[in-house]
Length: 223
Length: 352
Image (cartoon, rainbow over all chains, first blue to last red):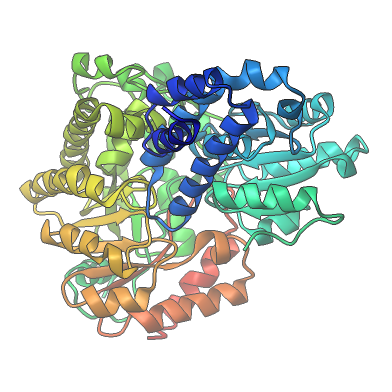
């Protein structure tokens, strides 16, 4: 099988959520002599297409979940090779991501994590029910460019401001961009708590993160 | 026309003196009575549910705000979970949440048995709360039995991520979890109607194209909804269905049609829907419920904006009756009460 064909098949396996085939194809591509970044680019293209389809509701959460599993299985295979090459160590930026304290709804956060990783970000996932101090600590330790927070409930979204308050109190608010998302979270809410942006789905979160990294000032939100 | 008559008339598609209001306030009463979440939801003997305090929350909130319809107890999403061996966390001033689902593996579903809602877990307290509320308010105010929809309840029991993955990778496991959830929902319907509720509200946040594929909705949600309806019909109670998703987009109209064909009395449209389209397309066949967007309007306010949105909703869906004004989804503790007052007062002005 040629490089081009295997690459196309890998993209197809990701889009089909084929968790068994995707890592095998990733490994096969490396064996063929493909650069690790060639493989990650293929993964990224596939996930980006899925993100756009999801935004249009042409595909739905179950489709994205299994694709995310296939993506992570493929990444697991290529990560050693990726770390070994200089180009592979170059990431767009570092993101610390988590679901705020009192909230355990990880589905949206997981999708954002995978889409950010697919787009070339280094992502540190703090999981669910994450206290404000933990967000701040992880961001400090990893020198994160961006803190990404998720909340699904109106009762927990207020915790996002707690994180920003901690950053302010530590004098480090300007060290990190803060983005927020989740079903009840709006741009107006993001503005009120002093976040740098709000995204309504995983694709928009990736676009927002990219814009923030190239912007000197906080952006006004994703459209 | 009292509140109960108003809601019942609207559910039959009839005209009402003013548009009835249903807040579906599931935990707001905890704030009204200044009670912590654990002392109500797990404050009874042995960590059971405190029926008296729960009922007090519902009754005092209704007396404060004057809405036409209540859920008959403080409601949380873990009511079945602890009875079946999962684990629920009860934060002091927030709402309970499931930390360990009932079915960590697909195999666990096959071993599960339906709990006895009258003797196991926290449900006996919930049922007692419904009885107290029905006695105090039931002649005057409509009481809804809040019951989770097929995929929604199965997601709480299995874990939503796992259930949705099962739908693609292990459909038999997804089917087993949803069948179990539907059987449990039917038990809820019977028990809560017997405890004094007047109609069934199927809360189905994960049952719709906000989450699942249309074909999965037709495969899992609609047959489950039909079973819930059959259980409600045994008690002569109407059913309102509230899945999430942009149902007024033309490509999703068949999903609304499929729900109507099961025999529902009403459909609540959540966020990202056009009530004018809903009224025009389905208003002659079912009651339309919905109205004020929570994240965009009702939560941030200000009250003047809420009044405008309320008037707009009533103008689009209220004409000719068969309409119940609601927030776009459920209301919980921490919500600004003056925002709800603005919505209710505007509806009371009869701005149809």
